[in-house]
Length: 465
Image (cartoon, rainbow, N blue to C red; front, side, top):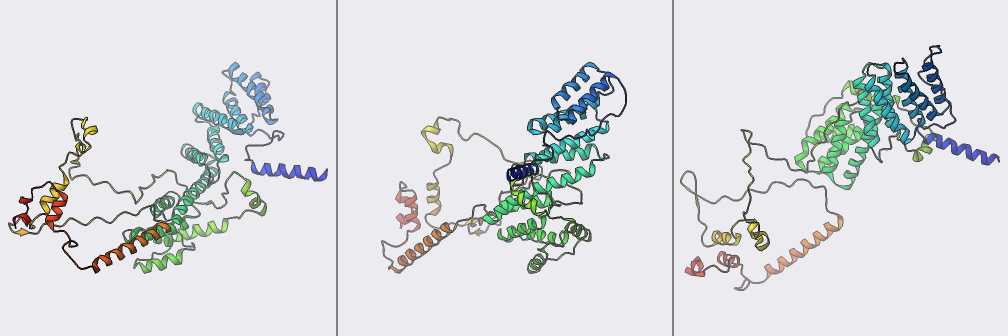
């Protein structure tokens, strides 16, 4: 019997640790936070006191019925605002997904009807707390974390002088720690996979949007490494990321490595910011690691660990737009007058030609004929602007391709090398054979005839000769 009771107690303790604080057991009695201490025998006050007792004893449905009776019967009562707030508190204490959703609606209505009361700030704080309690870990759904961030920002903006500002700021720092960790994990996955443009996009967003994140120095280090793998064109962004580590995170483990790479790149090594040094030192000293029991039960909990979150600093109060990935080509700049000469016009007028002649949609001449006309006979020089003959200009070299998020796999690289070796062997064999009339390369006339076999042979220079 003792073993059975111990198992039940341990199970109840584990469940109590896994449940958020708003999901209390029904037999727990808790005093109401803001009761009315006025001693009177008015009927509306009697109804209010009865409802408060029901809330303290967990009979939330009876409490709401009593409070609705007060509101509907005594429409000029001085306890109307308190009664409406008590209805919201009853839903909040009841907990559960349905109860918390109803509590949020009631708190929002209270703020709408009584925006100047002191309880409005408390209502907004509890709305933030509703989503904060339902926030999940970084590797899971982040909908509740985003809602909690929006509500905490609303608290700080709408009620900047309330007593809940410090609590709201710390909650916001905890929320942004979880959201930043989610983005960092995604960027770290892309970085180890070899998709460096995608990794750079995610990691750059982390470092700009969440500067108080405990892993910002790691994000900057992987961001610089992603730029390093993307080529010499990204040398300046790589240097900026390394310099930011040295300047804003002077106690990071990557400082010495960042200085070494900056010197190798012939870039200036900045000095550490004294304020950043003091802030980082305080954060490391104030950080408390969780105990053995918490670390044992952490895999079974749904709520994230926020012990790494910053304890000081102003949280970010606005969301930045994620940057455009570097693998996306930039659009052309407009003309000097602000007008682009790009117009849209129908290519063909008769759409029935789409089924009969697919080439009609291109509405261009046969490319083979143009190639044949230009490639036969002598290469005629073009006349330049100064009246002198000049050799036809060669086409401009293709721009360097943008980095891709899909690097070749080991099997693809192996097959590519085999194909290159095979092509080199075949080319060596062909070069070893003596050049004969049958194996000689085609002349320009032969190329023109191959491209346009219907052309008149008498018009070609070879035929004239």
